[in-house]
Image (tube, rainbow, N blue to C red; front, side, top):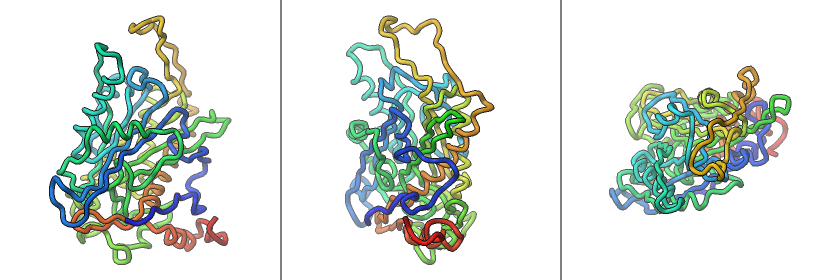
Length: 392
């Protein structure tokens, strides 16, 4: 494994027209925290149950209160459904997200789901009547990791929650993104944010992705065909050779990959507006070169903290008869849509640039996207700092 690269804005490359928040991360939305637990051990041939292991858990905590008892409005969208995002039936029914959102590998959904419930039960007084339908998303890391060895445990979920912080977010080969591959480079966790202009509300939109999808040829950065300029003949793919553009789509091929996108905003959105915001993540994915292929699980969740209500202790466990909510008028929501698309695209590129090179099970290597090569390609198309005389 090599050291990680740099974020896209570190390279002087600007994606979109809106400005990012101070951290250019989902944690720019006040109260949102992110934590990772990363599991990396072993080298050489795959031995199921022993390794090598390249996996983990990432958690997104929506606010700084009791996330289990203080839900926020949410909505979700499925671009292509060969994947899992638990708890979405209840989100459809109520428009509410209660609890953290967790991301992991495909075969660890169950243990992470159970661990989140156990955490919720432990964090409330004994005897409290409590139930939970956690949101857990997955992408497949079986090309680099012993996915059938079930190495993620409840202790890793607890560790990720304990590590959840409001500052800069570690990216690349960390947490749930540890063993992921994106556009046949090393992928993983990426994040970005955008701030809507003051005249449109000044709201912040933050995005976190677990990127594990895509063919090399399709990768684009700010419209530039970077993937085609760095073909697999130049930087090898971690996958066996298959026909480009419609070859094999089972596990261990580019078309089988997936992406989970979590969108957060401090805007006062209603559930149907959260669902619409989640859809716009698909536009950012498309700009980066994702097409929602047949064997891909492309699922997007959006939540809004602008209508968060802290329970009134004087009411006890009973809800008040009415609750006041606010909303952004639908004819003033376009800035949020643009923000979600731009931040999704940039988060994917940040995941690629931050991940570094990783060798996993059976010696399979996923090469990191080289920032220097990216700058060179962008310059040839008249984009980025090299086109203006140097890297910033």
